[in-house]
Image (cartoon, rainbow, N blue to C red; front, side, top):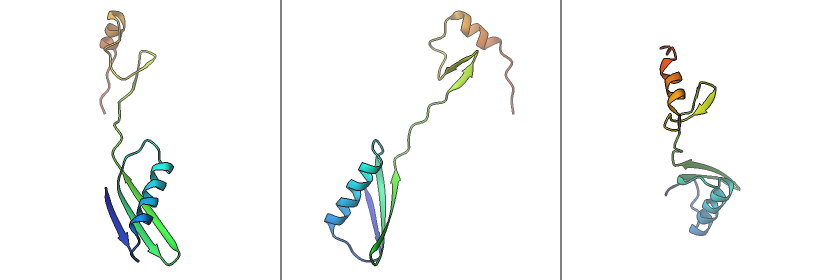
Length: 87
């Protein structure tokens, strides 16, 4: 994890506490970088996260699907016969 401290120097224990705070606040997200900006008694935290994989979902013949592999032959034929519009 890349950690950038701007302003006053802070202890490793305080950095670990900010990392733990980020993991608690954003469960299930993997933190790749953190910027800690200190200004007297105030601290600004900026977390950067690993990209979340995205699956394409389409509405085809009344069903929300990601892929056509679970369609039977009738539904595959319906999808094949659809008019496809280009932009």
